[in-house]
Length: 286
Length: 279
Image (cartoon, rainbow over all chains, first blue to last red; front, side, top):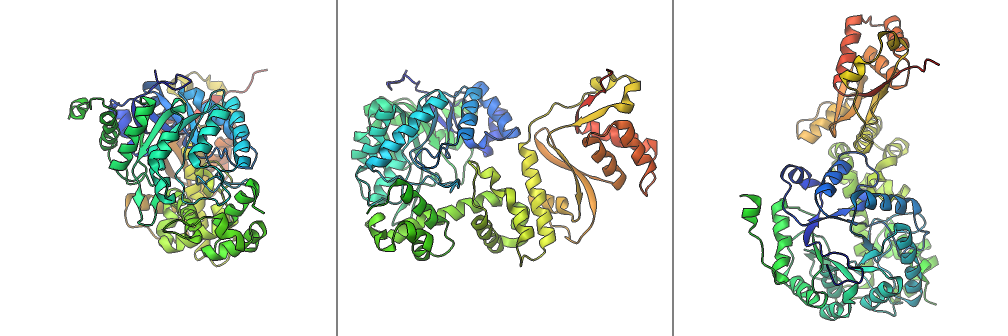
């Protein structure tokens, strides 16, 4: 069991369930620890995606990860969305449900982006109450991820990490620490990523995200389009020393390579946690 | 005075959705009402490498790119016909009028056919409207509930005297369509990377459905369309057959009817035979 305060399990090393890998997974049942599922892709379908998800959830541990909860929005909570999310979590026996510390729109509009919060006392108080309400509806603690951000509000009086940490403690929610996002945001804002990692409350971290990104020279975009860079692995090792290691997930969403390549990248995390890397050729019988 | 959380979010969304340049968006009346342009550099801090306009511009650029990517995936036929530049212009106009109001991008294109039909200046408007409507239909059928399929055993269990008044319940992922352009063939050619057929008007009929999680369609003759349309609309089998045998300009024999019916059952278009309650 992990060291987080809810004793949520260390699921090992997983990857995101993506459409391009459906056929491979169903045909080969690859030896992977777990899958993270993008909630919104399965909430309004009775077609093949749901069929595949049922098959996957039957065989592997599953965690739900969303992008449209908009927990920081000043719009009312979307109760229809939360009801469907809970139903999907129950259906898949998801170990936990996560989303982002962000807002995605107001006045009923969804911009479909993870928009940054101003880190103020007002937005902290507001978001604490929203997270508590969501956890009550979902009947399980919500897990929130630090998003990649490309701007900072001049009105912010908190650092992102202190805002997230206080929110997690006051609202009693978990943290999905996206190590790549820490690197991306700190680069974009000229901050120290080591200091960010060191200030995250270790007992709140229930999951890691790892991914590649796109460096544009003047800023970095969180594109999930490449291998994890050494600096991000270094941050991952630094955080694992504090948390003892928790469930780790590799995201790859653009130019997605074969299942084996994505899985192999995820398994590199084992080495960075001081665990032996399995012989993938043997595991895949190739 | 610094904007509160609500005003900050309303302002940022107004700037992201504005169709002009970054500077025009910040200076737009809606944005200025929430945050005066003079406050903008203080609200969005510049970084070492980017000024405040550049930083909000990243979000503005990603907004349109993300929505376009979603619509390209759902409307590959439209994208192929228009080309990327004209498709981008279509998307810009569409999302300006109908921004997403759903938690899922799967519903983003729901009003695209209506937008095409109601927007002046779109070339080949009728064809594009029907192509968009057909591609939207495919998306809806892709996500429809999975239904059980009528089995030979269930058919054999129907007493012969009950067929006259029996109703056939179609699977959920099915639609019977009257089409004015060869949009099915066009879309199939696009998906397979083949040369697209002509797009001249040609009235025809088809049933679009999902079988084993794959979308398919069958072209229908006009009488076959009339029969299948009646059946999926809940008309009792006897009445549906009579109307096809008696009406219409093309005579239909019983052998032909039986052949259609057998083919539709084999294709899994029905999920159950519903018998009239004897009471």
